[in-house]
Image 1: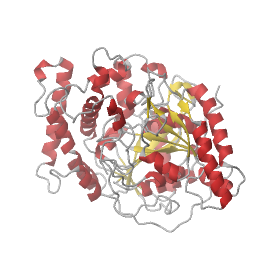
Image 2: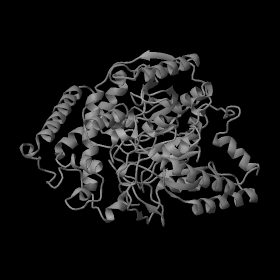
Image 3: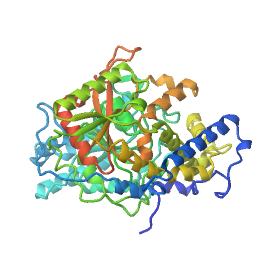
Image 4: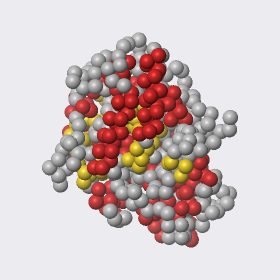
Length: 561
């Protein structure tokens, strides 16, 4: 089977090139003296950062020149499944697992579920602008097949009848995909994750709002309008998986797929009060999905609970030859069988410094209360060494901008006029990045991952950190392209992007509520659990234990108006 990068359908009109200095031979350096002063300063700073990290790993045994894929396997979490059964959900609340039993008992039909979800999606979209297209006929046809199978007495697939909707970057044959732009294109193939959901019996209800080309962490979109947070319609959802978080938070569907290149699953999950997981790099195939940065792109689920995320991840995880970045997880992985095992004795590391810098007191309070909840469950809390997160965040920015510009530079050429000003400006920042600097940043990923696991995680099983340092900003804070909005966007991804560079799994959980200074409405505050490569089972078990002991994931937005 031919191996290719995900999202290649877009290359029918845009011809991606190898990552290099745009419009300059990959063997040449960009002429820094011809750049604008601000670009020259940024590139020189990136050079200094890469050189400093190179010196840190040079001469350290086992670190130098270790490829990132090998480092992921070398530091993989040992998987020791526990033979346990899934527990009952909280009284008075249904997660999908309980609804599935009602479907099996024929107390409700999949077609009824599909119709109800379609109506709710239309209502939610009217208030939040969360949908690009509602696909009720497709979902009804899928639901009919589920109902017919149940009537025949067939074994029910894992996600039979589960109403899902997905970010507008996944291709499905015969259906449009837009990448968050007004001008959609027709798909001629189906994304691997959608095929796997189809095989698991899930229903595909809608393609959802996203920021243009997945290149904005706020949820703002000049092309199709911004997505609004269902908790407060004047607030951002976060992005770029904006619609995915909004429709799950509003209860329109039970789960949604998002993508995460610098935090785009975890940020909207945290700001909208839902659960979302960015898996280990390469665990979930991206074949048939739009690419922003092949080295940093991840696909993963958002849902109401860690348990529902585990169900969805079980259906889509696994090696795929159609994605050149897909990696086979070492050992058998079942995200459900150990979900209810105890977390007594779990060692949780709480990083200081980088992750606690400039934290809003309300965010810090939520973290402190969540730490106390884990301690009540028997977890041990440890402080962990600092790490050069600022540096790897900068190298991640470098790689993402270079790769995104290589893919989509035709959209920013004079006269194209097809992108919003912010997206065009971000792509323009990648034009002058030298190929050699990108390659140097890429070559450091493996050594830095190995060093991270050997030092920061040497004495702990997972890390616990905030997702976003302040309370949820207003949408109009992103209306202008200025220093203030730039600082806010930088803050949105500062605590999440380093984990994309390292390729580590991270689970975002609702941890509490807080009230912005300029609002009378309480809004969700989330935190993230971070693990070693392929430790999704452990993260989901810890998240499930937290959610059995707390009720933050059960909170719902007020009625939409």
